[in-house]
Image (cartoon, rainbow, N blue to C red; front, top):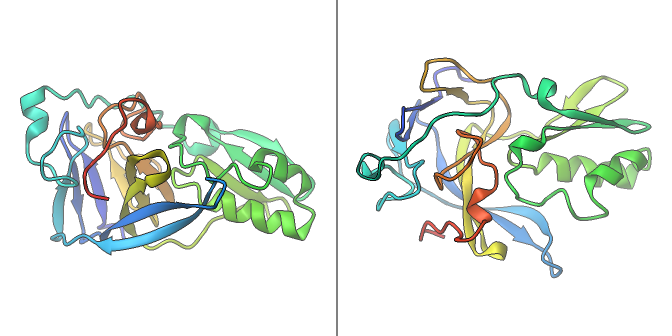
Length: 230
C-alpha cells in the first residue's frame, strides 16, 4: 500500500488525486438475464501525477473538474460515517462464512443478486460451489458494502485490486456510476480527517448522494446520471 497515493475531498469542490493514480473505465457486464456478473475493464484515461475529478456531476470536461461546481453552488457537505466499516456493518452468520453488510455504502452495482443472492448464499457456503460464488460476488461489490469473512481464520477475503480509480459505466441501467477507488488508497475529508483505508470504495460523482463522499446509488434514480463518456 503506497501512502503517497491520496484522494482529498475539497470543500464543495472536486476530488484532488495525487500520487499518479491510474484512471480507467470499468463497465458492469451482465448475463442474458440482465444480472451483473463481471467487471469489464476499459480504456485508460490519460492523467497527470495530480488531477481533479468532478464530484458535482456538472463538469463539461468529465471525469475531470472544470470549475462548474462554483458556478452552480454545489453543496458537497460530507455526511458519511467515519466509523470503521465493521462497526457500521450488520454481521450475518453461516456455517463456514460470515457476511458483513454496511448497507449505507451500497452503490447499486447488483453483483449481490445472482445465484440466489449473497444473503442466502452465506447460509450454504459449506458447499464449495456456493462458497466460490459467494466469495466472487461479494468481492465484486465495488463499494465494499459487502465483506466475506472466513470463520476458520476470522479474516476477510478480499480480491487483489491494483491501486487505481475506475470510472464506472452501467449500460444495463443506461446510466453512469461512481468512481471506484481500488487497492487501499487513502481518502481524506475536506476537514483534513482521514477515512478508514479500504480495498474497495465508491465515491459519488453525480453530486446527488446523501452519503457523501460515498455513492449511495443516486446516479441510478431518475433522472439518471449520464457522463457522456461510456
